[in-house]
Image 1 (cartoon, rainbow, N blue to C red):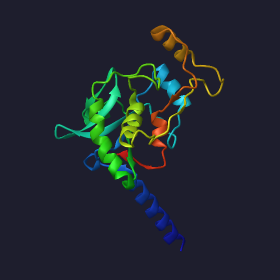
Image 2 (cartoon, rainbow, N blue to C red):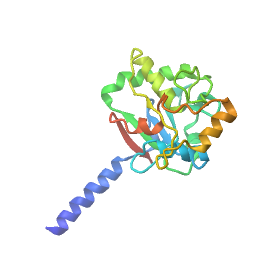
Image 3 (spheres, helix red, strand yellow):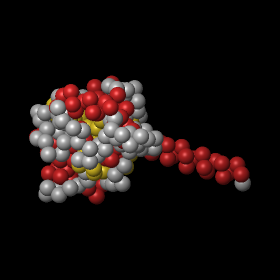
Image 4 (cartoon, rainbow, N blue to C red):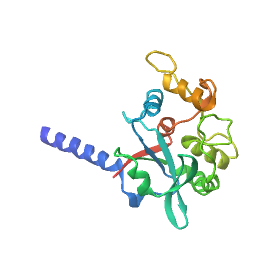
Length: 211
């Protein structure tokens, strides 16, 4: 009896583990790809104030779309919103890529968004991370494209963002220096925003690891 129980538990564990993974050939337009870009001071600060998913933190997200007959990632990265190959996206980090897939009941929104996101190509990257900007950062791209196809109603929710160390409750010095050096402005503490951690924890997403 004990052996049978262990066998069943082992089978369920391995089945669950298998279901948590997707191959590249199983990716679809509309999927979100999440990655951890690593170790700079700002990246570390971002991780400390954004939600994790099962202990994994993410600093970047892109969305899959079909472009010129190929499945590519549309992302706000570096200086601009643009397409990048899936392989290039994967090669940026040694950390596991995670996939977020919206429930099938949102198939209409997924189809519309995976087409509409192409219209954002060429928009400048939002280095201030402000919600009222004509520029866009990575998670904001997904927020706005789904808002557009949802009759300008929020599909994902922005939340007040913080730039404070959760341990000391003081603003991270890196963020103070960043905003003063490049924009001569105060840190926009409490402004509405969205980040990869908020997106990947949305209950409407099924999350997989890329195999």
